[in-house]
Length: 328
Image (cartoon, rainbow, N blue to C red; front, side, top):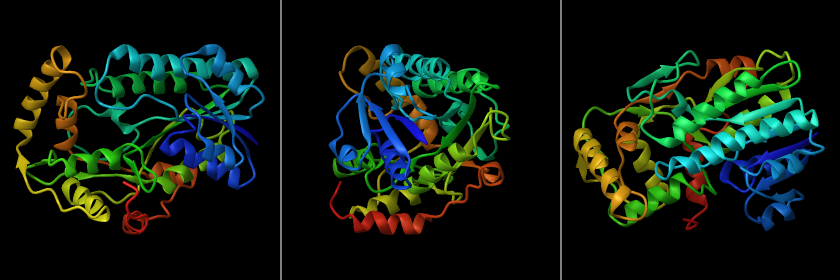
């Protein structure tokens, strides 16, 4: 098949491009920057912005399926930037599918679209969208996911995948930020009852996307649905953080603050960074909620409908991470 991968230069997008190309699919990557390593792997590169309707339409021409992975992630920044990429960009992808008669769309969403600030323990796809959000990323991703699922129909089969905290060798977001903060001595654990969280190793996240793409057709059982994607191995958050740091050769996090302190520090930092200090605050209310609540999910539906079963365990993933040495 001919596949378009938006955000093909990112962590998940590039891994997905390589997997599809390795099995013989024709792959086109759409992203804002040049990625020579992908070109060397035989992947066609198209540069452009998701908010540019004409560029997205041109990139989708001739494709059989779109994997819409590209997004603006993070916990800070103007709402307009998140809306421009995550909402308008998704609308442009849908328009391109309609224009070119593309019948399959796999959308990369996030479990944060249903996060309501409280513990999520064994949550499944019946979890509802909250009435309000404390950050622009989950709000705009939820709007985009709803748009994608509403677009599902006889002409376009659409499915949304919700991978949680993707990590592994080559990570450009989670691990580098975690390691940078630990090296700078700015990482604090939150005290109190240990809360379990789910993550997903990069190869497993790619597996889920490929499985969804292969099973997706108008009218198929997975069309119009959303699925949580994790390793199925929830661990206490700070145990997981310490194990990731150890894989990078760093000591565990020793200092701690209470969840209440973190929340109010986040509120004050949002004010300070919003009006006085440039850059991204080290703590926000949304991040404090994320760090002090449980986030683990029931992936039974993904197993039944997609045939998704995590192949790389957390232990194996950490071993692979240690083997990559000083990349970070």
